[in-house]
Length: 202
Image 1 (cartoon, rainbow, N blue to C red):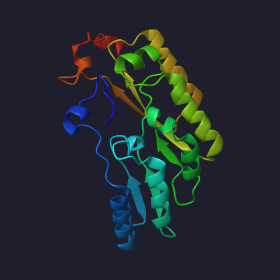
Image 2: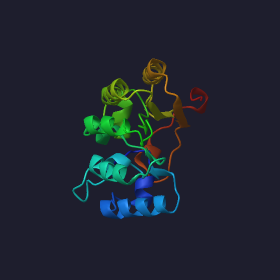
Image 3: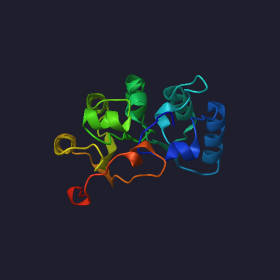
Image 4: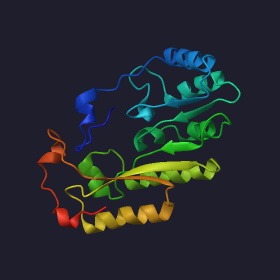
């Protein structure tokens, strides 16, 4: 992962981005399909950041993988954060329209409040996320977009929460993962004053 989110412990556990060479991934995919696999899930802590450490882009990898998917096989693309998918929207729309790629993408928003996103150090604003959703929905028929929310982040206000609620109502995500904020030891957010428990509900 390339992010430094204030609430997340994953970066501490897994370190910085480490991308496998594309040829290694493609060869592993070929092997799996030859062994009878019919569905491949391409996943990581942030699939959209793939290749930034080795001079390759995610779409470049995906086009290579599409070529080796046999008839009857399908590929599902894993979670990607908004900043990295923004760079490749045109190519991603084409890939998600491919008959052997699921029309599915998991793009976590976490909050629709620009202030909360800044405190989380998410490196995008709510309008960026909306642009991703609008662009892809317009170009990929029957696209399913899943997203994540964090409720009760220490600096979240009622107004911030309402903005997030409005976003959910606007897009009616068919798959929505809601998490209550939990202070992970050693993270910057753990040092922030928590909201009263009675004010945070799921």
